[in-house]
Length: 520
Image (cartoon, rainbow, N blue to C red; front, side, top):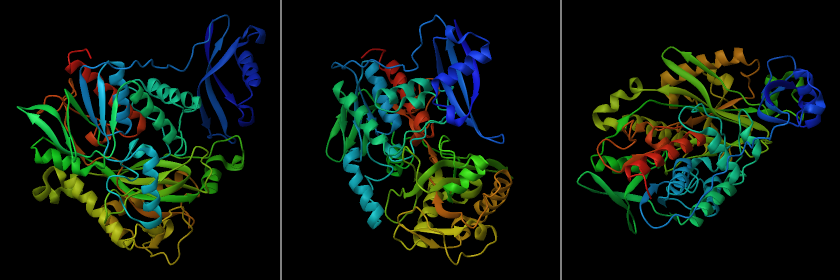
């Protein structure tokens, strides 16, 4: 017999398996000796009451074999035959490659950046000197933007594909099994590189190919059908091409445009990063239990509607730090990251406003489907100049931002390039500024203490998603103009985050399998 049950467990008992077994027996009115095992299938913190508790969903086993939550995939080396090029080695690209191997199709990954080990040197130069390598940075390189991030795995894309499979594959390649049950799983920036390396080894061991420092410079097309991809040094022929370039590969959009391949402008979101002391967020979320060592570092998720604008928190990093995520000289882009323990003294999150053609429509005549992209670019250039042109970030105390005051002094920040006092409304413009002001007041009522002089805003958070979509047919997932060209992931405008991008990579690989006749 297997019975499903929901239990509420005190934080100090969450790892006490015997206590959980006793609680299950009591709730089900069973003899504890009849319970062979209690398997936790989902775990979350409920902080709505006077004291936070863990809420768990579990399966209680009695005289039944225990089901394995891990669903490992068996990968077999691919023989010569059909092959597909994958442009980009972010989550969409890597999981597309793994899925192609499952299907017996040879994947050839072209990555403009470096492997995770070599990539670290360019990140260090960016952090210490403010010099941006356009091909190797926090967005470009093995693993994509997700490699050096918090590794947040929460997604609402449960109807797009098999989330459990994606998480299982990550565990199969070195992630902790807790991600299979945590309601808001994460891996941590210190753990992700090792997992990415393990996935790379898997692909290579199955005869897949990976070419680093290989930026796409052109597509090989004949009579409306893809033939392959050109890089600076080589031509690669293939039966199909998956474009998984990520949301920051602006030159890829320009390349497609040069080839008269259809593109579309799309709404996106941009705003600021807001940083608080983590102790404050813990106190707001957990109250008197803020110092309980059995509770995870507190996070938050906020959203509201202000007129026609949606305002929401994005990529919240508990116990994390702010990083420069610029991909070209002369621009400033901010992002956040956390290690697996989330034990640094600050919490940060993007606080962004939805942006549509009402804000950038005046650019349509000159920039067409790149109007949103140009608006994004202009905002990043303003932030760069406001910070002094060194990757330092323009910043303002939250209370000063709300009162239109220039901050005379600024609190300490985790942002290694430093911050410069600046009136952020001059970068953000009236629409985004007013939407953020109204939203912060709403959020301050939801989280007492959120509005404080200890919080500061840094600009600009602009890469929540791509302002451009590469269209594809809903049935074949292929571009409507070019046979054999399959846009995928965040850069194509169809995903947001590690798991949804991985799912999109998998289902795109399935579409390639069908296109190639269903056989490797």
